[in-house]
Image (tube, rainbow, N blue to C red):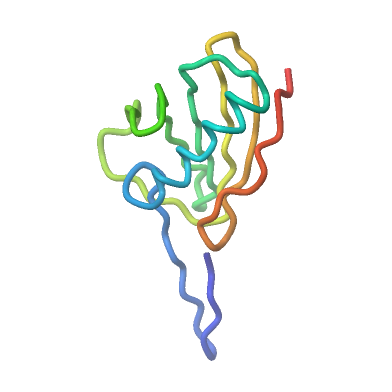
Length: 111
């Protein structure tokens, strides 16, 4: 997120796979499973511009049960952040994490 303070811009980075970032991503579970009928486990891919198209992936087996598949190093993204969700049957949904770090509406399945 870029906040303008006077003449300088401040970029706030967001780690989708720890703390409140992981909590925000786990919020895809309810609409994907209960509303859209997607089948667990869910693979969640986060994509951010970060001036170089940063990507990272998490496997969500259930609420509170996730595994970060990549990378092994800590990852920070600039917001907003595109989120793509794929289930075990290849159904796809999408969402956005907005500039405040909140998960937007989960739209799907797209395929």
